[in-house]
Image (cartoon, rainbow over all chains, first blue to last red; front, side):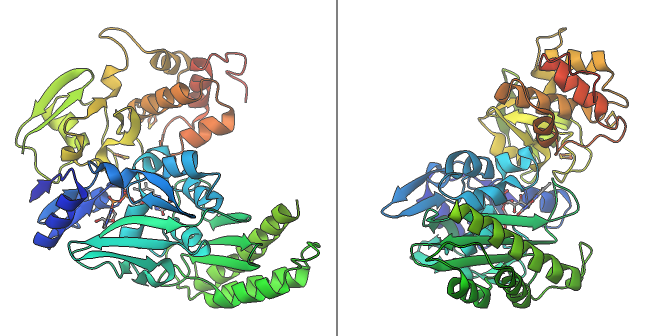
Length: 283
Length: 159
Ligand SMILES: Cc1cc2nc3c(=O)[nH]c(=O)nc-3n(C[C@H](O)[C@H](O)[C@H](O)COP(=O)(O)OP(=O)(O)OC[C@H]3O[C@@H](n4cnc5c(N)ncnc54)[C@H](O)[C@@H]3O)c2cc1C
Ligand code: FES
Ligand code: FES
């Protein structure tokens, strides 16, 4: 095995192109578990932690560009005001030690259906910047995931950054697990309200082969919410929204929960987050 | 491969490091620093917690090569030789140690917490220690230790 430590992005892309047997490693919170348990023996560990650009974020026009190597701790501390939904999700990841090390890029690289970074990025309509020696492309987040732990990332590509518009309305994230800390979600849900555009964004986690949006629920809520009057949320609107979110899921039975429980939990999470977000909006 | 880093203020070099090895393995097996414990090797228990460039991390999840040239501080380096850090003292004083296996990781996590939040509330303490498992104490003595180290002795012993 080789250990390679490029200090520039160009070098990293060159290694990635030359060595199809390279496994990128950022925070290592997924990769090292696989290494320690002999589940993975790549030809090269490609360390991305010395590439300065990867750990920066900045506004570029109206969008935030968040480097793939930005940790959860930094997302919470530095971006909590601009991306409250993502920061809420980041707060539920693992423990302080895991949040100090784990990155958004690593979450996308693993592409777990349970990855907590994914639902808020879906709700916010983020894009993923992928790069290779061939060039750079932007992939809408709802087209990034292709199956459990699979994505459109090509063998010679690296994840450079996530592009996302700062919140223009209330955002929420909620996650069901067996306790408050250190849990992989049984199911999770993220919601973003865009009052300016009168649109609603959603993201479902841990309840389908990939993280996914609940498009019908988004359209329903956008059409039914009393944007003009900012009146209280009608209980039947909240309930129907929950049903539509649950209907958009395709959960399975596994050690963490049954499909039926996941669907039920999602309906509850969706109703609650809509209720909280609408209350935030109405002040 | 050869890995050189600063450990507890001293430049240390480990030879014949396997490329997929963890920082924890390097510390324990190659540099003779067995303070950081190895229990789960999957980030769940926190017994391997060390500082890497001033940030608390699980040493079992850091690849050895990622630590090269960086500054590592382990439980052995929190206080000068022969002395105890106030956090270590508080653990002894409150009886927050039974088998002791979780203790080094907890000490580093608490040290980190108090550096960031000098007077944490109970929920803040629990949140900060969520990644450190203890199978012996039931955590109440550990809570007492943190409160004591934080200089809130009035709360120590109360629930
Ligand atoms: C104890 C524990 C608790 C956890 N709890 C949670 C949780 O609550 N929620 C959650 O979502 N996750 C959790 N995780 C999983 C993990 O922390 C996250 O998935 C994290 O985001 C991974 O980031 P990383 O930087 O550590 O990735 P790494 O382990 O370094 O990499 C993960 C994957 O992404 C690839 N990769 C990394 N960076 C790039 C890049 N720039 N371009 C291309 N590929 C890349 C790697 O090759 C690898 O396949 C937990 C893990 C542990 C050990
Ligand atoms: S041994 Fe590293 S967290 Fe358990
Ligand atoms: S004292 Fe034994 S595990 Fe904590």
